Amino acid sequence: MPRAFFVFLSACESAKGDETQLDESVHMAAAMMFCGFRSVVATMWNMYDLDGPEVAKAIYAELFKGGPFNPDDIPYALDAAVQSMRARGLLPSRWATYVHMGV
Image (cartoon, rainbow, N blue to C red; front, side, top):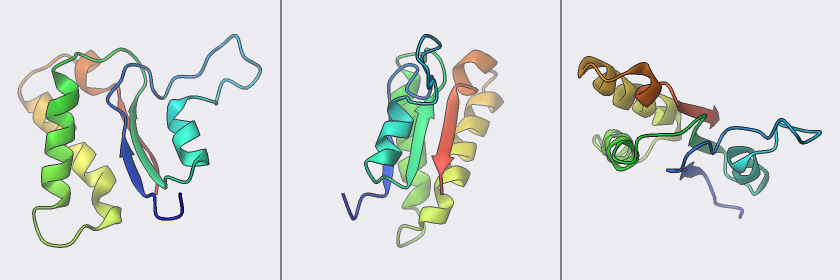
């Protein structure tokens, strides 16, 4: 996938390895990076079902709000989405599960 850049994995534990495997660093987010995606947003544990679409919408809105897409803005867009969840007083288990990997 030579032009693949960003993937948002809206699923539970997409950045969690399997402790029973020799290389627990192999997980869905890492697999996406091995496939060629340079930037991945994933979750480290179970997520609340309604949070996934909300976080994705917030990230994409932030990425495309001011003109052309800038890949450097991905971690900042995730941070803005998480800060919004925190400001609403949601439990840390709901917002701390989201991670950004890559560039």
